[in-house]
Length: 117
Image (cartoon, rainbow, N blue to C red):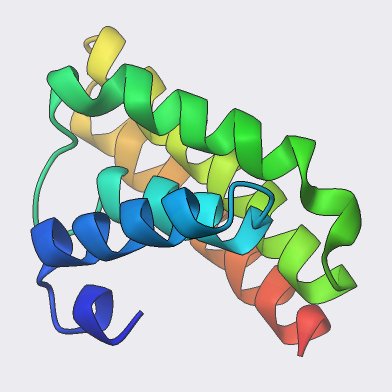
């Protein structure tokens, strides 16, 4: 996660892939991979990593029963955010609607994280 927080997503992805290789039942490893491959606010998600991101989300959800409630919630939320952000790639929407939706989602995300902690 330090690599991801330092915006070195390519190296973070390699690290999470190695973690998955060493422990294929680790939901948090799959979550981390999906997190670093998914959309971030500094750049758009690359189309070529979409299948790998979706597979990582699927594997994280499949192994989520071994996680703490907080980890499980982060897996669910990251999947929701990725799906939501990808929907904007597929439709042409005017800026005001996007801004309004982003504002609502930011409020929901803040409440979600606040309740999680």
